[in-house]
Length: 457
Image 1 (cartoon, rainbow, N blue to C red):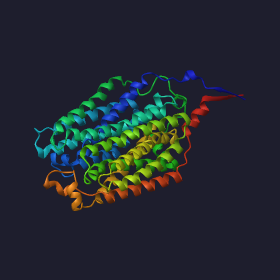
Image 2: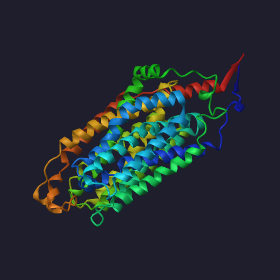
Image 3: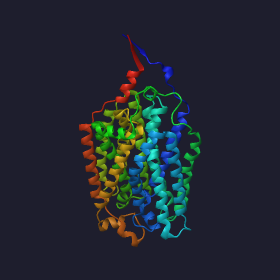
Image 4: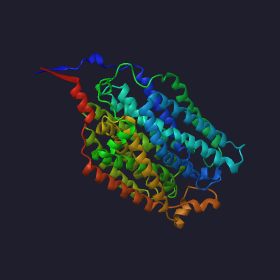
């Protein structure tokens, strides 16, 4: 028996794939901007929009809407492809930003600012599943098998990078000196949202004329229908463990971003430092994700990389949960957040790829969408649970806090010792479950390896 390589002319990658990667990355970046716009300026947001929970609602509506819209997006992407999903997500994100921009003007009556703004936020939130489910689809159809993980890393990490940039820039626009500068801030966010609209002119096809890999060839195994794909996913023990643990990680990240700024300001850390920590969390994650993406593209060690990274992130989470209760330990906070970001975010993009591997031939948007939706469900739970566990600060904390400047808002300053301990406990349970029960099979890679080589008798 002689083994011969599968005809390489059957597969091809196109230079246009990099334009597609840029477009998908930019819409994820913009949607991340939109989602987290108000998280780093919680108290100014609540005051400007005349609602004590405005910042919380702006954040949570993304998580809540992603669940029902997520099922629609999964089905749509698998049925109609990447092109139409990109256009839906891009335009919904842009229109939502236009409405938010109008609502943030000082010419709008303060009593109706919040209803208008939350409407725009909801429209942008509708876009989120359509754009966040695209990276694995893009990587599977347009990139070679040794490029998929890094392509998925770049596009999927663009969303948290957008979050980090906005978390850092929001306090520059809105602060003690300019507490009502929301209109200018939203001009900047809307301008960024217009870039993917321009790039949409180049998104003209959902898949290339010639497939990039054997798993995308016309004669490859056929993907099941959307409903059958969902059923197959939940029949897979590997996928269930992955979706709960990786999804839980996404949810706990959302809770951390929501709670980090108020937890730091009550201990006297400056608004600039607080915003910088949000940026550091993501930027360190980009480094970790890039390294892990290169490793799995070259050696395919998905499971080992994820387990090691998860454990390191757990140690950093424990460190952060302790140092967050002390003032004047900037170095400790920086170190904890850097390590947590680098280790924690390296799990996300390769985890999405692992979801595709474990559920092959289920369509990519289905497995990715289910993981993200499960993460958003857990995110709502973690945000609500941790906010219910807050306490009242002691006189010393009240004297050093940098959260509010006005006495009539002093009641909104809270302590976050117990919320962070609950957060740590949840992370610990997820890590132990993942290490003990996650033992995957690389179904897509095994299929492609078998198809590349034909046995000829």
